[in-house]
Structure formats: structure tokens, C-alpha cells
Length: 479
Image 1 (cartoon, rainbow, N blue to C red):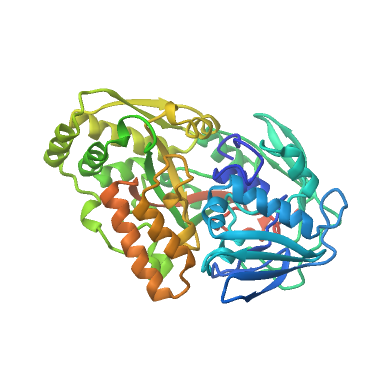
Image 2 (cartoon, rainbow, N blue to C red):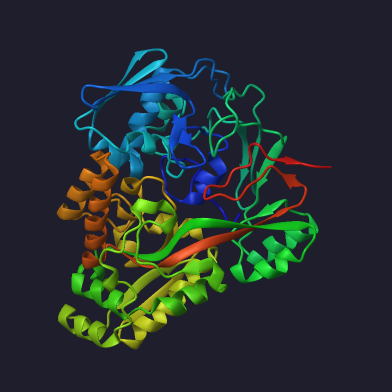
């Protein structure tokens, strides 16, 4: 892996590395099939009543936590209640949740103020997902992070040695679904005895270690290594398309970026081709596209407000800087070398912004530190990140008010609320056009471009397939 996760609590962070590791341990009521439609996982199914405002979810029986205790409705109620309070996605959905209750040991009822087109998508989302923990673990955490990493997944947590490894092992009493594997759903089988997730920040070491057999898999490689990896008989390169988009998040709560003219100046100045070329290298692994949602998502892909993307207009940017009253104060930009595309895109973007007269203080830290600092409004003005592929447009992290950066305008929240409730695809598309226009007019974030990830696995690792969300159940090793 690229480094250490900032936490092992899936409710607590949108950092994808936490999800990639810990959803082997934790599970959600729903997950996604190969077409990214929600399907039951810990749930048996659900019914909708009261004009779309009441969801009655039936739980699977015989599902056990890694402690041996059977999962029941009070565990689900406690977990969903906490997720709605602390998770970025949970907060977005829970605005319309009136209550969650256990009707009986295997039935949970969610009461909504308004119908929702996003609830089941949200309950199936992997990143920052609605993981089901034992009730006692939730209660012991109180207002803090969970301390006991207990789930229902095919692997149980064993040990975390900081900067060395996180170890999970096969859970012998795992209650797998009976259906054939389908996307992230269906039958999950832990074929391997254990998995060691190793933090290896140096990408060259990750590649070399996989080629020699020290590692079976390595993530987040430089895309210009693709041709080389195809020539190495012992390994198999994997391309994840779509993966997400690379960008910069601006601080709306405190500091210079609260000035809309200053945000607009940054957006006007940037030339995205050299930014993405530096970040990714191989042109086959990136594209310039203004849309918040990828072309692979069909109807959700929009060209609204495209004129505000990749403007490359330094004169306009200088004029906006003057209107903003900018006097050369340093702009603190957090980035990390652990994700190469973040560091290199920030480096080139910073150079372009300095050409128009902005002073960029590029602060390079490890990923875990960046994730910690971005939660403190007084600790940054801009930070680098990427936003992963998300199946439901209303739940995309880039548009959430609770995500660090805190883009929380009245108009955006109104449109996002309507998008969350709407289930008609054509009406959703119209709302997406409006949301994307607000994104560019207000400079909610700055999108550089879409990227496709490169990873590599050993030939003896079978059953593994590249996907936007990394997983190793249903994968095995040949001898």
C-alpha cells in the first residue's frame, strides 16, 4: 500500500486506504453488483412504504461478528446512528432521516422525512461506508474513534504494527451469501489464510518487490511503467478505469480561499494538460474532462459549465486577483508524495499560479498527516486529493458539505438535497447540470482531470480483478 491509513474506523474517514483495508473486516447492509447497482449483503432485502418514506430492512440470520456474537438489529441501529453522525456520506443522507429503530431482532426500520433515491446506494457505498459494528463497540467509542476492530467480513482483524503491517486472517465462521459472486456482492470466500497490508511509500520499492516476489500485489504505480510491466513475465499489470479525478480542495471556512474572486482566479489560471501530464505521465491514463461524473456513468456525465474548465487565461486570473484584493500572502497547500499524482499535479499547478502573482507555500507531508490536518480549518488553505468513482451522483464526496474544505452554500445544498431525493433518471440529470454549474461558478473544488490507476499483481495471484475498490476475497494463490 502507499502508506499508513489515518484510522481503521471506516465511519471516521473518507480516506480510501482505510476502506481498501478494512472492508475485508467490516461489511455493510448492501453492496454493489458488477453494474454498480445496490444489492443486499448483510440485509436479506427491504420493502418501501408510506409513499417512499419508510424502509423496512430484513437482516440475514446466522451472520456472526468475529467475536462469535450473532449480528442483530440493535447492532445495525447503533452502527447506522453513529454513521449518520460522523461519516461525510452518512451526514448527507441523515438530513432526511427521521429515525432508525429495531422492530424485532432481524428487522430494522428507517423512517425518512422525504422519499430518497439515494438511501440504498448510500448503505452500499464502500468508501466511508455504513459498516456494521457490534453495538457494544459503538457504545464504547462514544464521541471518539472505535477501538475494537470487529466486523462480520470474511477476514478478521489480527494486528496493526504501525509503519510495518496490518494483518487480517480468514474468519472460519464467516457467513457467506449463497449467490454467485457479482461485482462486490454475492458469495465472498477467503481462500488465503491471511493478508498483510504493508505500507511502502516508495513506488519504486513497491514495483521491485512485486517483480521479485516479495509482494503479491502493489498499488498506485506510475503509469509510465505500464509498458515495462507488460514485459515482465512474473507479473500482471492492472488498469482501473474509471478510477476518479485529481484535484485541489479549497478552504471555504477560514483563510484567503474564502474569497470567491481568489478562487476564481486560481480556476482561470490553470492549464490542465501539463498538470495532468506531470501527474500521470502516460497519456492513455488520463483525460481532460470538466464533468464531475465520468463518461462511463452514461446519463450522469454532463458538459454543464464546461467553459470554466481549463481556461488557461492568465490575464483574466490577474484581473480577478486584483479584484480580490490579494496582496501576496502565502497560500498553504498540503500535498503528499505517497500519491504521486497528488504531489506532481500540485507542483505544476503551484508553478502556474506563481506566474500570475500568487505565492504558494507547498507543504509536503505523509498521507495520514494530510488527512489529519485537512480536518482543521486553521491548518491549510488548499489540499491535494483525488475523488474516487462513486455509483450514485448525490453521494459523490466532492460535493458534500461535511467533507474538509466545507463547500456549504445554500443553493448547492438545496440542489444536492433534491438530487438525493429524486429517483427519476431524467430529472436527476437536470439536477446534475445545475449542480455542476454551481461547482464551477462558486469554485467548490478545482478539478484537474480524470485518471486511471495502475497496479500490479503476481501471476500466482488468481481470481483478483482490478476495480475502483480493491478487494482480495475470492482471490487465491497458486503454488
